[in-house]
Amino acid sequence: MAIESIVILTGAGISAESGIRTFRASDGMWENHNVDDVATPEAFERNPHLVHRFYNERRQQLLSPEIGPNLSHYALAELEEAFPGNVLVVTQNIDDLHERAGSKNLLHMHGELLNVRCKESGVIYPVEGDAQPEDLCPCCGASGNLRPDIVWFGELPMHMQQIYSALEACDLFVSIGTSGHVYPAAGFVEVANASGALTVELNLEPSRVESSFDQRIYGPASEVVPEFVN
Ligand code: BJW
Image (cartoon, rainbow, N blue to C red; front, side):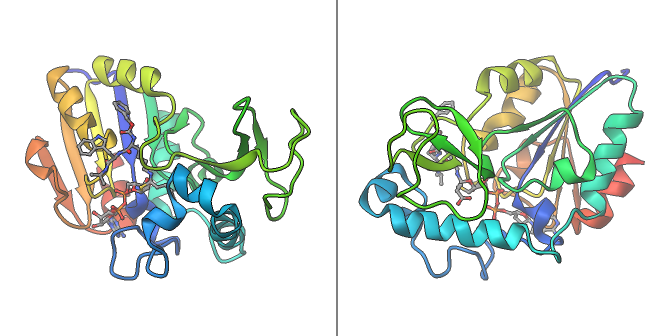
């Protein structure tokens, strides 16, 4: 079967070798924070200072000189450039390492660390420096309305219609560096299977949904992704 349309789902594992810690690793970045204290809409209502500080620290880390794309990010960008058909990268990651590597057809389903969003209008703004609860929102002029542009637990992920349409039309679905613990992303493999696509998992270790894939290749992303793509 000729492959014309590819959907690639990426998770924290693809950025691990770039120095950004994954969520469920023992040294995970939520080690010092309960997820309910920093990654839910209720947490933001309760303590916006803490939530902004948490994301400000992560933004500073992302922008530090030692963080950059690794070979797996570059391999996906090169695939998109060279492949005659359609390649869509759907990332759960809030970092910008796919963009920095050169990926263009890219959807951030869990938002972007380098943006804030108005709670009232939904308008998105790039963050310059740190964000604070006191910042005035450019569209409504109020303070307290700008929140991190992140999809927290219980919120609807972004671009879902576009993602499901692409999954229903793809011939190949590749999942890279994701544990399969968080839905709806963990269910994408089943949508691709139902569409008749070949499904492949590339990860350091078997994910929670590994049995749903046709093929599985385990190892560090910087090795298995370039090998798979070439
Ligand atoms: C390497 C590597 C190397 C390491 N090389 N690999 C169905 C059933 C049960 C629950 C639910 C359900 N549907 C919805 C829910 C509720 C909830 C949910 O899933 N909860 C579960 C925990 C049970 N989901 C939601 O609330 C979502 N919203 C929603 O569902 O809305 C309703 C809806 C209905 C129908 C359609 C659409 C929507 C929203 C989820 C938002 C997730 N947000 C987070 C936090 C963002 C904030 C922040 O970053 O601070 O996004 S959670 C966190 O997990 C983050 C990640 O994007 C996400 C996924 O994690 P990921 O990427 O898989 O990372 P890890 O750490 O888990 O795994 C890393 C993997 O890499 C591991 O496997 C390693 O082995 C591997 N690895 N080094 C290759 N070098």
